[in-house]
Image 1 (tube, helix red, strand yellow):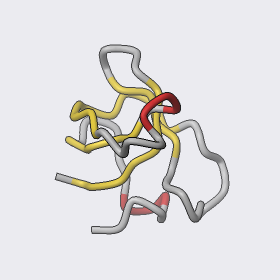
Image 2 (cartoon, helix red, strand yellow; image 1 turned 135 degrees about the horizontal axis):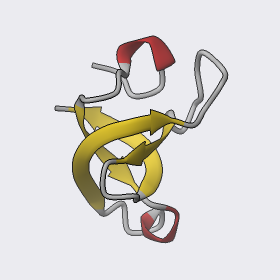
Image 3 (cartoon, helix red, strand yellow; image 1 turned 180 degrees about the vertical axis):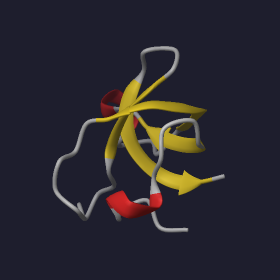
Length: 63
């Protein structure tokens, strides 16, 4: 599924995100969505979320 559409992402879902400091390397971090931080229905770089462990990043994959 596509991480650029807000409608595809729900709290409690397992996702892979890229953190701000990892954008150049593209390193992904997996976790469970706690909050959706992007208000718009789409974002070209991925919807910004906060994971249950507090890490913030943009969704690249929905697992």
